[in-house]
Image 1 (tube, rainbow, N blue to C red):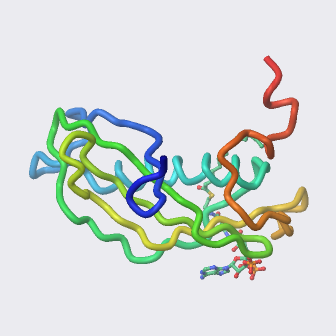
Image 2 (tube, rainbow, N blue to C red):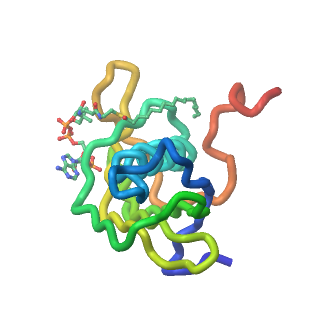
Length: 140
Ligand SMILES: CCCCCCCCCCCCCCCC(=O)SCCNC(=O)CCNC(=O)[C@H](O)C(C)(C)COP(=O)(O)OP(=O)(O)OC[C@H]1O[C@@H](n2cnc3c(N)ncnc32)[C@H](O)[C@@H]1OP(=O)(O)O
């Protein structure tokens, strides 16, 4: 059952020494790299296209810090299917306390055609399956 305003939390990360900043807390750049990758995978599954690129990120709110050894989880949900774009909302939180660590209200990815230009994706709703992924990526 979806929770927290329909955000589904997918990937969990363990905060390691190499992810820390000079204050000994989680480096914001690591967090953004993880969330961008997570959003790219989410967009690829929703749009069924490996050619989806980050277009826009709204304000990023670093709500609270994470410490070495914390387990965190990253959540995303699609909030708008445009003609060629997909808008998502993101949240990162502590896995056990559920304290929010980061929120991004709008993360926009654009679906590209083979020519590298924006292309209509034709979708209007979230899928919770793998039904949009081309068959060759599903065959082992
Ligand atoms: C299937 C299974 C395969 C699996 C196997 C593959 C695995 C393979 C993994 C690879 C994973 C890659 C992960 C990539 C994640 C990166 O890191 S991508 C790199 C960073 N991003 C970039 O380099 C993009 C650079 N920007 C561009 O190239 C151009 O801006 C773009 C994206 C082509 C768009 O061009 P544009 O002229 O802005 O296009 P335009 O038609 O005006 O707008 C397109 C859409 O964006 C919206 N938009 C434009 N500007 C804005 C804005 N400021 N704010 C909000 N929305 C906006 C428009 O409203 C429009 O949306 P729709 O109304 O059509 O829905």
